[in-house]
Image 1 (cartoon, rainbow, N blue to C red):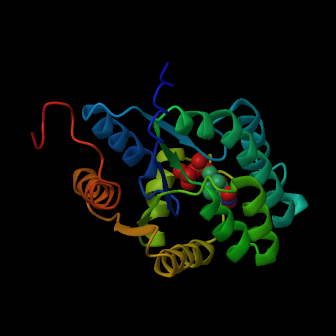
Image 2 (image 1 turned 30 degrees about the horizontal axis):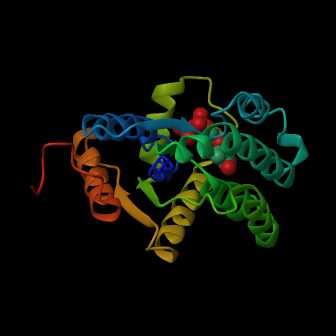
Length: 225
Ligand code: TYD
């Protein structure tokens, strides 16, 4: 008897960028667009995306872990990520779904590594043991001036700015620079997207990057015969 063909491995796409860049909207738009092609795509986010990781999310974003410092926060993000990968991301990829994740390991590199001054060797080690081979196939870095992003984020969260939204403007400017540098250093994986444009224009840019880099299959009945 023939073995059933293994499911085609899914693709792993991450969105990164500063606050208020519109990542969650673009995650949703991309999932819908893939869905219209008949591709099952799971939308998820970090910190969070699994039961254990959502608990850690609360611990970090409430600011409760802030007194422990950026090193402890990096370890907590890594612990949340390990659970998220095991419970959500790897099972989805193995069954052939695409995974679209709002933030991933690049956020730890930038927020805790560059901005928090945690030793880059430790950040790299944490990434190696948690992420392993499950690296993103494509990372879309949504780029926006810090002032604009903070204004958008404030409109969204009102007085309830979270642990990182409440950092200074210079923190958010450095954040933007760090994400831009990261995208420039890894052009084979990362695409920088200008997030100042309206939602539809950004969604088109995102789609162009996905179509160019990952060549999603055409829906059945369309394409070469
Ligand atoms: P979230 O409410 O998900 O906001 P955003 O829309 O900005 O993604 O908050 C996540 C916050 O956690 C965000 O400020 C970035 C930060 N963060 C890190 O500092 N390190 C990490 O590894 C991750 C995943 C997020």
